[in-house]
Length: 305
Image 1 (cartoon, rainbow, N blue to C red):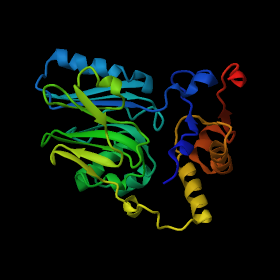
Image 2 (image 1 turned 30 degrees about the horizontal axis):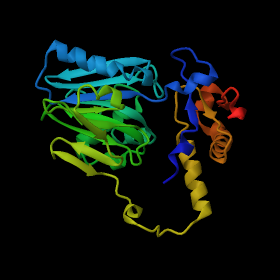
Image 3 (image 1 turned 90 degrees about the vertical axis):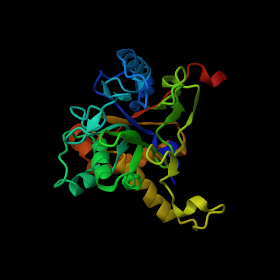
Image 4 (image 1 turned 60 degrees about the vertical axis):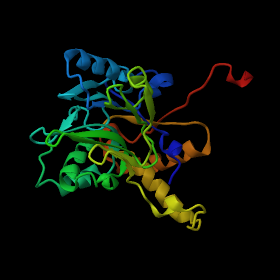
């Protein structure tokens, strides 16, 4: 797998709200999700409490706040608009609103999946994460390996009152899992949404999904190399280069302006080089032009440290 720190050299610049100074542009880079499931308390006071916990993630998504409630089950999201900023507000639903999803992620193959289900599913937003719903309806919980992207999501099915949650293969997007004192399940992008209400919480393991129907975690990401104590694949520089370039190119999927954050090292310089070379081929170039914006972060008097 590629070093995920390399990929995060790509930096999204949001038009809503107005652009911030370069030194603070990276303060919010992804959405925030919170799910509270199986609560014994369905009261307005509980709803207000869930909203309060969700707002602790507001710095992750300043563009929209959404909440779904079905009896003692709550799904909340704080959105940062990257794909389809004029639609795609969450939670996301199927046609009859019986399946609900909140997600933090980017699904790079969402257009391919949309075409696959165009005749079966009516998409109501331009969100790349909406494809999670038809995949679930078609394959049940056995679809996560069909997603090419970085993500964390929670899905609730009101028809059988079950839910599932999943995190991407190597854990690019953060996710935490806890239990309330009433036995409820809490899942959130950051610990600050859990720590006051969960006596115990832990990291949601990368490459895993949690199923309420099965009653626990299981790995969905099982590549051959995962079980190898010593790598069995020979070093092939051309194969590595091709994989690296494809990884950078597919991350140019965005409906908002973007740039590259340079650290001064080799990794981010390579990302910038590949981005500049292939930018003209992307949909983003048609919307925002082919000039690549780059940023660096410095510390005053850092040379004295």
